[in-house]
Length: 364
Image (cartoon, rainbow, N blue to C red; front, top):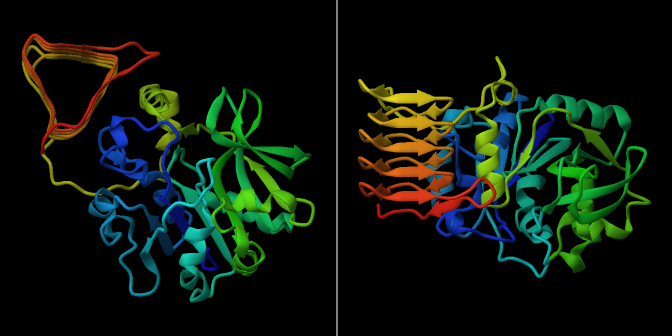
């Protein structure tokens, strides 16, 4: 992996944005209490041995910078290589939710020209999975392909996920949205650095498109191969998929796939005291982060750091982000409660698994 650099694009938005992403990009969305979505692609790259990683930032980049900093927690605060924060351009005219906008890549051409690497691994921060990217890289080199994309068979319908049409393992076309059984793109691929620079010239007139849109008429001459990933992977594009992916991690089997021994998901370090479960509290099948104090009842839920659940309060099937207080007698069920909220005593926040209630971020 000494010949490979990485690039994570964060300069895109969801087609159906919710209150959760009004003040933050998708990449910095909290996940499982202690993580952010960007931790997964960043850790996948670092665990594979990449030591140079660029991140293309959106306009509302503050929360991402606050989280990743200089890259110290991922061992990317280095003299040679390291973490590079790159500017994102204004969005182009693509209506399909471009994740690899050519304009973003061209504007950061110097990141690629100054590198001596042979290959580039690209990723977004919309998918949750833990994979050894050496497998993808080895498959790319062995096949002799121009581009190798990471794919998975779609387990349902999703209008936000990009799909590929295949002839064997070769990509012959791209489509927007997948149905059950389709070949879904996990927004991760390998390409030679020189071919990428050539594409900047090929598609200069259509730099407002996503890279794979721009290649639409060239799948005959550009050998794009699909590499299937058979582990757990969740697309996070809206409140329903965000809620479902958090709840999935309460399954021990899925949790073990996301956090296998020896391939850790790294995140920003916080010096926070352990969670405290007070006498009379009752907690089942939940992930409770450091700094929490639990007096009441919590089941099938995920709590961020420093959440206080007072005596007589109940949380069921919910995601409660950091620095929230659930007052005595309050009930939170099938809900996502954003950070810095106080749920008053006796209040009910109740949604359904199909239509989750969202309580937007409170005042900081």
